[in-house]
Amino acid sequence: MSYLVFARKWRPQSFDEVLAQDHVTVTLKNAIQSGRIGHSYLFAGPRGVGKTTTARILAKALNCEQGPTAEPCQECDACLSITRGSYLDVLEIDGASNRGIDEIRDLREKARYATSAGRYKIYIIDEVHMLTTEAFNALLKILEEPPSGVIFVFATTQPRKVPATILSRCQRFDFRRIPASVMTEYIHSAAEKEGISIDSNSLALICRASGGSLRDALSIMDQLVSFAGKEISSDQVSDFLGVVENDLLASLSEAVLLGKQARALGIVANAMDEGYGVRELVESMLHYLRKLLMVAAGAEKGLEAVSEGELELLRRTSGMVSDVTVLNVLRIFSGALSEIRRGGLARVVLESAVMSGAKLSQALELEEMPEVSTRAVSEASGESEPVVQPPDRKEKAPEEEGPGERTDEGKNEPGSTRKEEEEVSRKVFDLFDAIPRDRS
Ligand SMILES: [Zn+2]
Image (cartoon, rainbow, N blue to C red; front, side, top):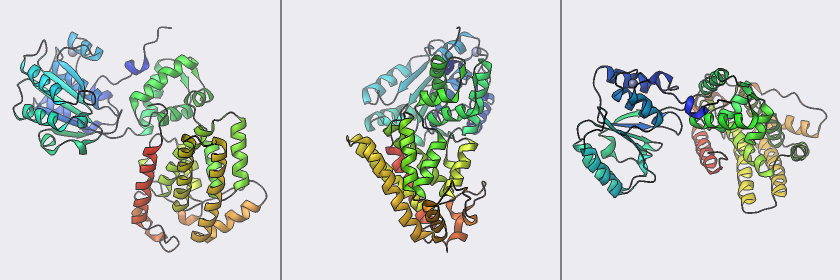
């Protein structure tokens, strides 16, 4: 099979192909067209959203034999070797592993020499915030008197750790997270062009597993193609990614949050029978509960790579309980994960988490939302599968954003003041940071 690696082939090569960063690429194109090119740029933003890709495209735009041009030809020697990563005047330095003063001094020496072939010598320093203070000082000296024809592009996921003296000498561009819908569409069309068949559910799973990084999503596609060939089913994607289906997570969360412990334990037992790993289930639950909490806190826009179907499930579940309950259950599962990591008997830990979660939810809901918990309890003791509708007062219009909009609910939920909700989201972000990512 003549198959060129997805990750290389589908990585954006021109400004127009960069996903969801028009505010950056349009400005850069205009600057190139009008010949106003800066000496140093800072590209800030989450990982995998196009910072180094854009830096390379900028290098290409400046050094293309037809250029400088906002639309590099992609065919000349300069364009081709920049794409391959073998162009002598584009130097990529990983700030994390070359963080000392010697490296920066060395860079300063080399920056003095004329370019080998191109018009501009371009230094791309990735993860620049990792440099040591001394290295930053040395870098500052270069930026104070930049050698002509030398351009620096600093990329960072943590701009707050870059000293103000450096920041003030850079033109700063903030890259945004790529919306899941944009990324899914891109990968879908790339897959189509490669003759790969894959459904939208699978694409959503891939985007979710990529954590919003296009680079990761493309490399997952590569691995999937070698794993499953060109007909990719969502079962294969789940198998491959080791992810637990959303339906399972939704029903388990609902059972726990509504205090139905018997049902919840049954779901766990079924999942184990089907071959899910305990730790995998706990981790997936943590990710799911975190998303639930974001939806409950009215912060849906902060979610990445969530399909419409999943969002619907999340809205349904979050409509049934208070965010405080979700937060507490999230804590229980987070504790369970630590215990499993410390070597606790995994299945026992999971089952106790499920039970504690259910009991706590029952208690909290009784305390906080009498009408819901009455129903929850009656369902728990009751008969058949409930068709659960979210109570009206918790329904939110999708365009509503920010926790502040929920003031009308204040009297029903004394715990849901804006401040507390902010606190809740802060805590959940902290918790989320503590969850290991399998594939990154
Ligand atoms: Zn060219």
